[in-house]
Length: 111
Image (cartoon, rainbow, N blue to C red; front, top):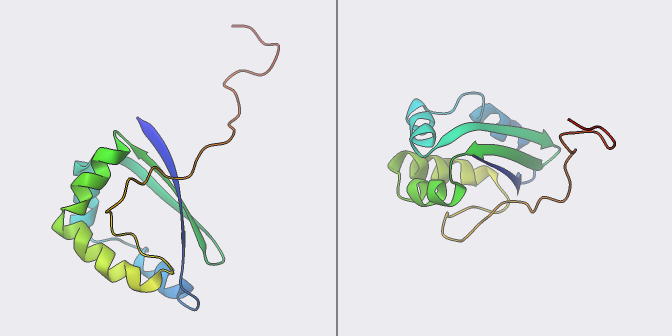
């Protein structure tokens, strides 16, 4: 299982639109995400900055599958109108590079 962090940015003045559109995604998109190996997808917003945390079996395979998926193509075409930079699913995106995480054990503790 992979955990991938992503960052996107909402186009100026489109924050409420973005929030509204994510209140409930289309059922067919939900099914496509799950079929592509997504176990969880969480989104946080700070002003116009959007941060995603994706838990997925294989992120690269998910992107390849969703690039050809009609439900995802419709969603991307729709949601991209609210974003500053659109994602065409055409590149080798690997998410935000991790820098640090809290160790599973505190220093000096032995199991």
